[in-house]
Amino acid sequence: MLRKLLFFFIFLFLAMPLLRTAEVAIIYGEDSLRNKKEVSFVARRAKGMSRHLQRVGVTAEVFSDKNFKDALSKDCKTASLIMCQNPSKEFLAGINSFVGRGGKVCVFYSDSPALAQTMGIQIDKFVKLDGKEEWWERIVSTWPRPVHMPESYSHKLTSVLQVTPQKGGKVLGNWESSSKTKGPAAVIEVSNGFWVGFLPSEYANQSDYTYFVASIVCGKDKSLWRSAAQNLRKEINESIPQKSVPALYEKYKYTPYPKVKQKLDILRNINSEIDVCFSKGLFAKAVPELCKLRKELDITQALLDGPVKLKVVAAWDKSTVLAHAKTKRLQ
Image (cartoon, rainbow, N blue to C red; front, side, top):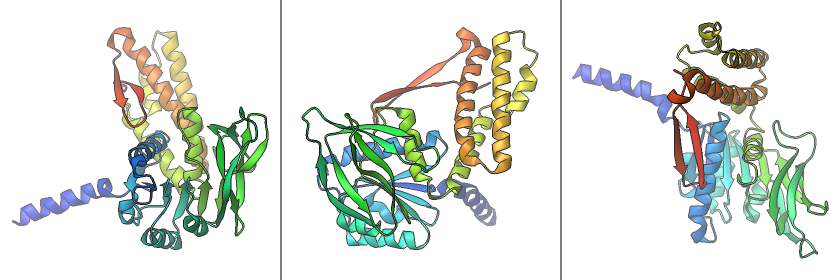
């Protein structure tokens, strides 16, 4: 009996890191959604955001607002709210409690006056352009802005929600029309997080979407960038049998194939830049370099395996209606 208890506690201890809630919670509207027919659409957007954040090493878990108490656990540092249009008093109380203990909130489209008040935002009205052929086409960022936020982000809408920062809030990006007309604020930074006046889409430019969302989610807590960089480096090293880029280089540095040697040199140079970033605590700067390193490793894998041994596995992801291919890891 004592032996069984001992094994149980050992298993529980080892499993605890796997059971911990992610540092970022993505909460999509379900109870708070005005049109219940849109629940599946909003849930897909939430899952897509989670997947893109994990591409840059940010661990994110998706929750319905029905389970907001589970989402706002002690491990959660930032909560991203997606289309929480009419949140309940209990939900707002939970958000206020979360902010009170140091949590940050990123709102991605809501027209709730109560949630706006919690975030120090005033909702005014929807703004349309005069011309029939006119669209709001992009968000143009201001300077300074959160790290990795694109200078502009493409997103077409016929009308946008005009919001105004209160209590010292700062506009980080404005809408711009197809005729270069400057429009209302699109992204606002407040003391406890960010307010994004629209629901970003990954379809126009996936890379811009990834860094646009990540810049907002990590913009108030630099420790998230540190965790992201550490996660990416661990993922990359675990994909290499030698467990590091320098060890991989040592194994193949005398290869007779010039293209392989060229790629190995590129890997070593990128890895050296990442080492410098880590040594200086520049984890946010390291993240794009780590993503580049991961991509170069895939190409190197193809060269090492050759055209016959290379295997590609394609997976269909219904959440974004996109097919993704992933190259086999280094062996």
